[in-house]
Length: 199
Image (tube, rainbow, N blue to C red; front, side, top):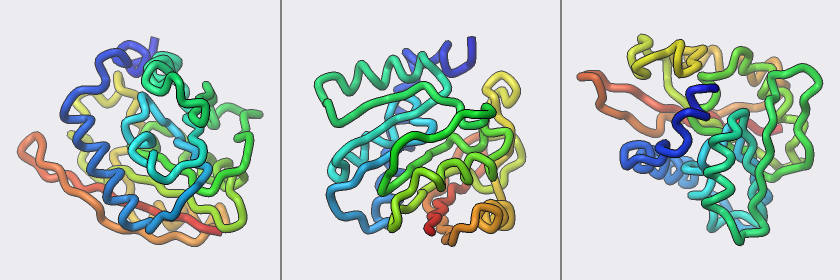
């Protein structure tokens, strides 16, 4: 059982809720959204990030590789027919995104990916003509952000602007990168970025 399945039922604790709300608000400010949008939340977890976009969505599709996380997501969104979820691993060969979206979101999921560039290319295929992909994650850090990198499935200690721009280049996407937040933890300061990709 994965770290995420094991911890899904206690995932929504005050620190995480506050961080995701802050990151979502900063992303919404930068994106200058208008309603209504069909939104995909990649690596949605329990929905802490994606559900903050409720004022802007016509529909929300949450995808994740953890059934435990999706179970909590489903419990939280019962009675909302415009919100759906799907167990999907885009890093698995033959797995592809279904549907077309105006906005694809992802928060704190890309550092768990073996191959972020490949996943971005798969996400691109789900974009409508004027669609955008908005990824929030850690800027390069020393590996101290997570208490147990191996157990928590951490594959990257954040990302540099050079890495992110390289993903965009390989996917044939335009990219803008913004600093959006800083967090004090472990007597250190960790920085978060928002990368917005467009066709």
